[in-house]
Amino acid sequence: MSIRPQKPAPATPAPGKLPITELAEMKARRQPIVMVTAYDAPGGRLADQAGVDLVLVGDSAAMTVLGHDSTVPATMEEMLILTRAVTRGARRPLVVADMPFGSFQVTDEDAVRNAIRFVKEAGADAVKLEGAGPMLSRVRALVGAGIPVMGHLGLTPQSATMLGGFKAQGRSAEKALALLADARALEAAGCFSLVLEAVPEPVARRVSEELAIPTVGIGAGAATDGQVLVWHDLLGLYDGRAARFVKRYADVGATIREALEAYAADVREGHFPTEEHTYAMPAEELALFEQAAGTVDARRAG
Ligand code: KIV
Image (cartoon, rainbow, N blue to C red; front, side, top):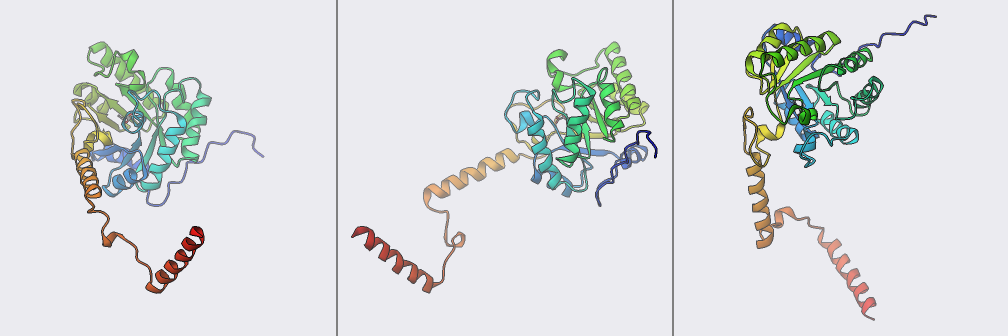
């Protein structure tokens, strides 16, 4: 019997699931990759129906759905619940779970343990983590455990404080070169794809041309191999001003507000519910009910 450690068998994708290898082929064919964030089952289902390729359960959930001011407070338990919901809705797209702050920064073991939870408990196909440097060892450990990893460079919101706020990165030659070196290192460590956030277009172009793995940009111009937008930005479900790189494709927030106002007015004015929203019962059952209820009333009164 062999005592050599076994290489993990590659997970068999569910029937109908986009094979992860298809992403590199899409890059080779210059077919743009479409990614969107989602945080619940209806979101996953709608993204699937719309034919998107990748659904990211972003830790942006901390801000978009949990009401925090940054992504930092997102916890493993919250991200697991959201990821499980998304994978129930999204069948064909690859679902990528974003590893929240604190779930992978300390040790490789933490990273593997937490990523396994995303795969086993929440049905994620892959995980995403921010940064390079010490995180390269995490990527190698995760890939060694058979878990596909998406990298994330540029504006990495979990370290926004260190970066001096939510602002574009890689804008000096020195910083751009460092970003290019990090991108190469993440590819060498085994990432299957790389998010580039808030990076000048020429830098994102250079990274995308150099790497064999597909890049997915957000605020990184048109030269990346794919694009990602945050659900709430894309659909107009946020308060205040969106970032420069956001394109809003609908004003769902206004539609929801109008519907709620109409509902409130209907209830207050007695227009809802009407007969069409109401259940009836057979006349003989109603008669029996009223007779018995009357008896009870009489007994109570006596
Ligand atoms: O958390 C998130 O939504 C992200 C995207 C902005 C890439 O990381």
